[in-house]
Length: 122
Image 1 (spheres, rainbow, N blue to C red):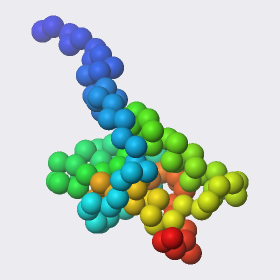
Image 2 (image 1 turned 90 degrees about the vertical axis):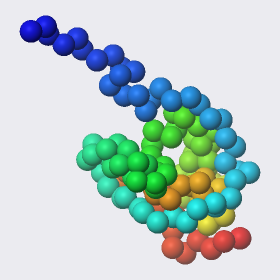
Image 3 (image 1 turned 180 degrees about the vertical axis):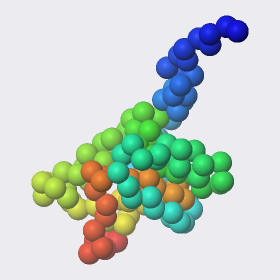
């Protein structure tokens, strides 16, 4: 019996090799309701959950999206700067809907800045 060859990085992590979309989320709006929030620690099966939710018809925003749409990092940086450093306007429901509006599920790690309940739509 032959020894199986080791998997390549592309075979082991195909989600990291998806084509980049280059969407400017600041021009987007919410198109589907947010139905599932998975707020957990990293390395707890989050990619498996992301895959399962997507298969079940719940498009899920996962940190892997950073690699698929690099402009998202600009909005995440602005959200973190506003929340943790008080620079720039605070993120409101409008900005969160721009960033996450195409997703029915969101997978966050403990370091992600969740919107504050006190933030109102402008």
